[in-house]
Image 1: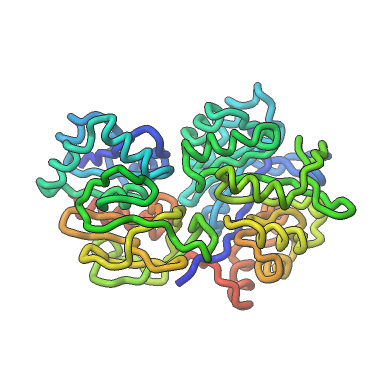
Image 2 (image 1 turned 45 degrees about the vertical axis):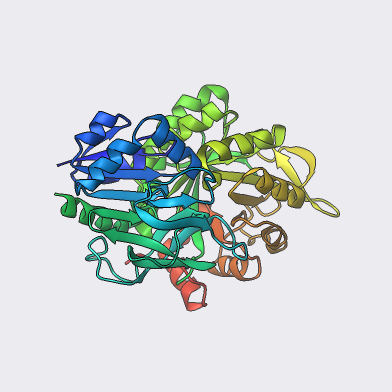
Length: 201
Length: 254
């Protein structure tokens, strides 16, 4: 199976590609709308600025093909900003429209803790999870972000906490998202990517 | 469930080989960066820093190749720096596989660079490295590998760096670096309590208790060391067990 990694230009997709290849996946990185239309499984890695990601998706005409593809049931994994972009809007990108597949607004973590939320943290599982299968509930994952999803919503599968609770893992039909970086999260991160690949196969 | 304190080995390189020295002088070879990276990745390091301490213009392609080789070994984050002076330099370092860029001399010369990189890659990718040395009434920022005094107050510079968009401070005590006499607790605490971003303490680490102290009294979010890990004087696993026994939360890989 070929996984299509959306490379919109600003993020570091190299490490995601490398992690997927180590698991035996074939990877195609692209910013072309036609490649998204023909994809069987999609990953949107995101680091940097949410406004830059959303602006790049629109500038490169990727929004429509992506939304159409997801409505057909194609498995999708959003990483970090790739998760945040699923919501309607973000305080980091005022005036810009998110993909709007999930209700709610991404907002800044509280200022009584150090930001970015940078380093290794754990998860609190809310419901049975495909992505977290065969991963110890004690596992740590690597986070690097200052903005986060709400703590409530039907999509929530696991929460994490830094200043406030936020949704760290999303599973809703074919839509998956993780706020942390599985490609930087050692063995549990590799297992999570493996779980996504298995679900996508 | 909370963010844990990080242990970060540092690879000082001459571009292609890991080197060591006291106060950035008397360098000697300490191994292959990719081999050490693989070892630390397996031993439970939380992150890795790789620096080009030669940092000459001509050296840049060699160092990029080193970043590529190191990144291939890792399933943890990588910060890289040394000689990054422009947005284009930073872009090539990120493209080579680094998750974060450390800025030092170039940021002092032109603080605007912090903002440019932060806008492009996000604050979480911009680490401001500060080499600080105690003067009579303050800690002074030094550049060019610690050789050149700047007159800047390290506390003020850290605050300004964060305002400009740095997402983390890598704070090295020039007084302690290479001495193995413990982290500079006063310096680390002063800076960590002034800024809103995580602080990585560096310089002087030897004993597990040094790490415990810098996390508790020094308010450090992460601690960095080189020689004690390279020489296998201290294993990362044993260090983390010690910290956990002393009620400092760390990540113990399963």
